[in-house]
Length: 313
Image 1 (spheres, rainbow, N blue to C red):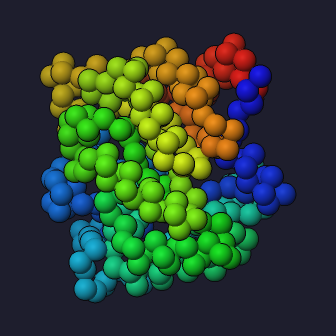
Image 2 (image 1 turned 120 degrees about the horizontal axis):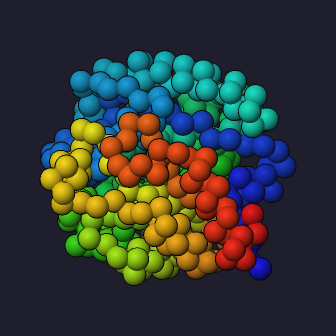
């Protein structure tokens, strides 16, 4: 019988205590297919407010070519404030003893190197922090940043989280991703050669994709030797390009039944060394599908399906 290998179990085994990730959203960060570098408008589903409870918009945004950063002091203060405002609840509800600072919203390597260095080192200076996890895109991380993260990983737990989404190039075009799957292959391969931990994000229910396409993305991601994985259903929020298509009747969200069936089949495919960091997602700022509004209900249905499939929780 296959056992569900969660990220929590990985951390507990390694650090012998309860470790939780602290989600952080840094003002002034954006991504290259929002600012026009590779595309405009962002991915069709993108409204980063829905992914982070600590999201704050900023008129000025950074990129890899930025020569200076007038927001750095504000960013460092925001980082500190978010961290210390979040950890009390993690200690109370999860008995967390150690923390990983998770740079979550937007593309958290898409800024001048000195800005990244200041933010990462500030995060690692907080009490009981044993590492960082950096969410980014495979087309937005420099060799300099990767080498620096490698150096940090000699002393701290360091993860790079890449939004893979799908391995289907036609789908990547449809969602306005701004890069192809070959870019994903090259960047993750480079990251793994440096010995860094990699978590890949996959989305099920992308426009036009069949279950076969989704499972192919899982298979292709496994081949990249990733260490952990996050699964997300594609849901529709207001103020996105996807919302316009949904309202026109041009997009039908994945059903809960198909999502869970695809998820269970995906988990069965995973090697024992790949941990699972997320099995579903939802938001209150939801247009569709209705089932994504109820996280506890989703998890109950997922757990039931896993048990029926012979997967121990």
